[in-house]
Length: 279
Image 1 (cartoon, rainbow, N blue to C red):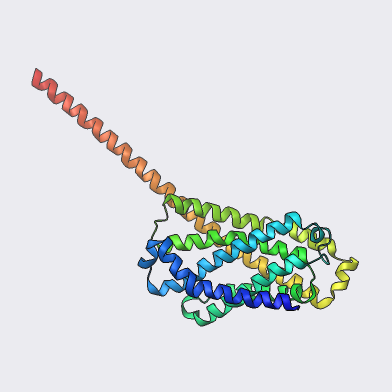
Image 2 (cartoon, one colour; image 1 turned 180 degrees about the horizontal axis):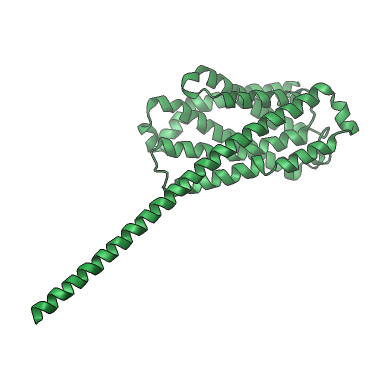
């Protein structure tokens, strides 16, 4: 691994730690008055998720730029010039290391085995990208999945701020989260794996060596299994929210109909009473 990448990893770790410890608490008080109403034991995860959103936006947008404009990487997905990709991967590795430390020090409240497996699998694969500069296109492609993270975090923010699940903003975010998560993590699987299989048997694939091949394929399988599990949970949650909102709307309509019927009955009775009084 070159000095530049090591420096970026270290700086990324420190910057995200600063955002978590200093910037996030102060910004949250300013941007969201409800931050002060959140229980103190949730402030750690709040700040963690805000940092996660910042990382996702930086890395995700950088990925799209590389995918659209880095023609060298797209032309040679296994051995193309990895300069920009390595920079982006180094930022992510610094973030993953910061997040692993955070999870370890707050395991009782934030510990999640799935996230640890995800982070370790990603670090294992990205280590080859940083050390050998291989597979830049595929590493960049995997990082596009970070674009779904802001929506996932926003759902948690709404829950912490006690927004009802039937609230319009919660429903919109929930639908957007499910759609974006599916698009950037699940819908791309056929295209991604098609590109992977296309390299099998080629001279570029053979040059990788067995260790890099195993790291690449095994980590991708592990990550995609986790993505499918998470997609299932998100889809189920989205269905419950939509069902709850539809049920609430239906209930309001039924109450409105009953109210109209009652008013009509009262009008009829009032009409009869007037007529009887006239007679």
